[in-house]
Length: 80
Image 1 (cartoon, rainbow, N blue to C red):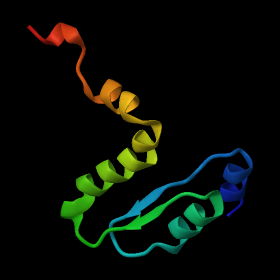
Image 2: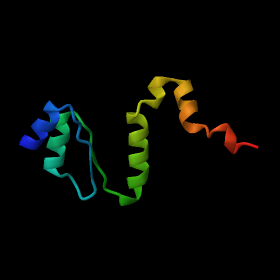
Image 3: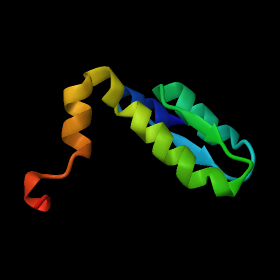
Image 4: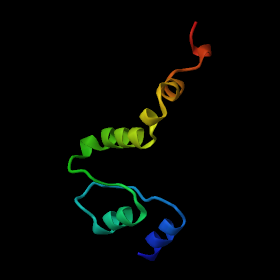
């Protein structure tokens, strides 16, 4: 527990994904540091959940269309 309080004091966030039911220590770590705890029952949803979770946590939609277009448009050298 001291590890998580030290992480909070250092402004670190602990995000966790549990594949085998709810793990209390991971939930507490996420709660203490202000992170997110995700419990997956279906392992087939792991990749989709992580991608969507990171996509929204990066705040791409909050930054506006210019940032979105910059991040997801390949450089002009790839077009011919």
